[in-house]
Image 1 (cartoon, each protein chain N blue to C red):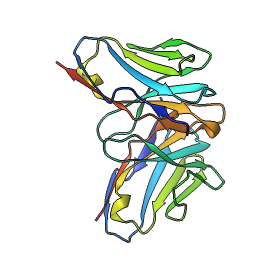
Image 2 (cartoon, rainbow over the protein chains, first blue to last red):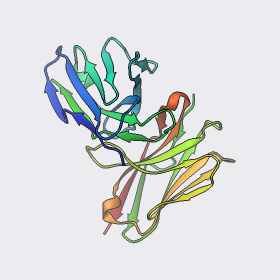
Image 3 (cartoon, rainbow over the protein chains, first blue to last red):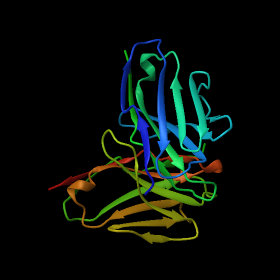
Length: 116
Length: 111
């Protein structure tokens, strides 16, 4: 199947700092990428839908000014957690869809964010 | 609101037995469903999918059944192996292509 990578895999930061997470589709062009967060022992919760060249669509309750998403190319989307706080500590996972005619989403390995 | 849920949060089976993981969905208009496997600390891994115009689809050791009448989805794993131990999620495709995930079932395989 298609390969999606994330970087970094793990990050620890101080409260108040910003953290950028990258999501790349390695062997296909992803017109749409999705960002999820997952707390321990819980399911994945969709945060936003990222379309190449346009603004992201955020799910209800997700602060767009806190979770900045940029999808500048067909192979890269970034999620920036601004002014991170301990409650933002979570497992962040991205997924990529190959195109409008494809429903299957391929997931990255996730990024573990710990805010001290 | 619309949601996808699972009946059993945990499932323990003996190695070699068959496993059945269930899922209920609420949106009768959904036309695409996926099962994912997630190992600890990793991202979800695609297992198998099914469209609403099908009742059954088979893969290698896995079968997905879709019952649209009662809005129920199941994943069957044949001859379960220790490597199958993970959390399994069903997901339902919504408008715009986004997926809504069920709560997950943790499968534990005893040797």
